[in-house]
Length: 120
Image 1 (tube, rainbow, N blue to C red):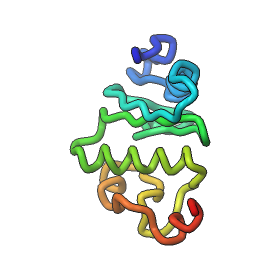
Image 2 (cartoon, rainbow, N blue to C red; image 1 turned 180 degrees about the vertical axis):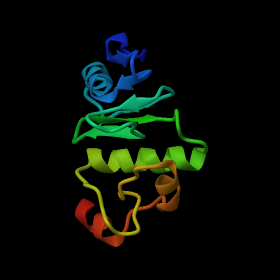
Image 3 (cartoon, helix red, strand yellow; image 1 turned 90 degrees about the vertical axis):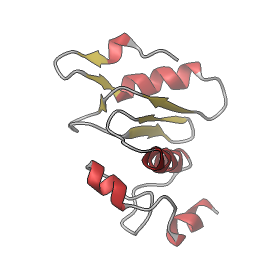
């Protein structure tokens, strides 16, 4: 898919993730989808985000600030967790909220037992 230019904010030099996600969900068909983009994204009052998801509908990950395939996999897993109904977790878990690249690197690439149980 192409990025929606209406989502671009030139003052921030970033894309508004909510607009991109809605466009993606409307155009992806009935299947679940994960869209990986190479542009910087933001939402609400956040300076930037690694990803965004909509429960049961789809998710996006921005690789703009991500520096490894391992981290792309982690953030993709995190966003898919949200699509499946998981919230942020305080345990040592891939669902832990990341407010920086450092925090994203510190969390594991897998679900904790509590989050695994929620999916079952």
